[in-house]
Length: 327
Image 1 (tube, helix red, strand yellow):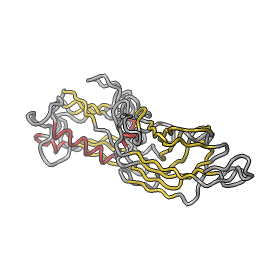
Image 2 (spheres, one colour; image 1 turned 90 degrees about the vertical axis):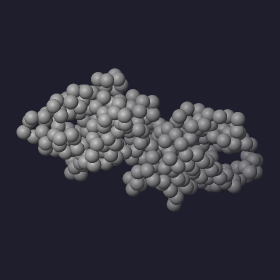
Image 3 (tube, helix red, strand yellow; image 1 turned 180 degrees about the vertical axis):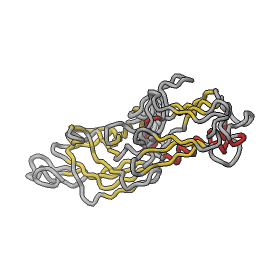
């Protein structure tokens, strides 16, 4: 495939196409199938190369196409997100003096999704967190208790509770407290959803509704979040490959192959990318029996392969087609 160093065209050669595909929701660490990728950890996948790939000096690699799911969670439990290692999926509610933690499933949420998840919880649990049935749920009718409203001008949320959803159409005797404090007063976990919704985790912006007997006990109670909500902090998925050397991200050298901006992509959809121009990055030289791949957000927080809801696949070209060895 590659010309010898004495051929007179040592910096020109036929390109080598590379193509990799990591299955959706990938968690396999089984090494018995040599053709299947292996997870070294939840963020790094290894492909074995048969036969080994031999790369002379001054090779470059350019991505040609890719597709992947825009599905990495922004809300998750502990040890899933490097950006929130202790988790960020819990809201504490004290309903009429009884405290429970509302824990959301891992997912890529907007504020309407959070609103839906909270309303599902109060329709399927009582104030202590016991499951209904057999327990009696906090909300039994069609009216939602939680209402989240996004304010586009400020990027902040209005967090509201509607007493019409509750028995008698009023807030309970001791009202409802909503807490974003870390750690949780119940289980001690530091997994507050507060920063996502725009609330600090020190308890300074926790709030309480009117109580039964107050003049406003049957009126929707609203609280304006003090900080900007942060549902869409991820602006790009960045693909890394162990063959790459001295590429740059944010001024630091690394093994970046390509950065995929997410600005126009719809969350929880499959993104297809076709490179109109290749941007080659330099490769290490040598003989390689495997190649490792990992992805991260634009800040360098690695992303778990299990959270891609569709296969992550891409193709690239390895070549040295010019006199200087570049593509």
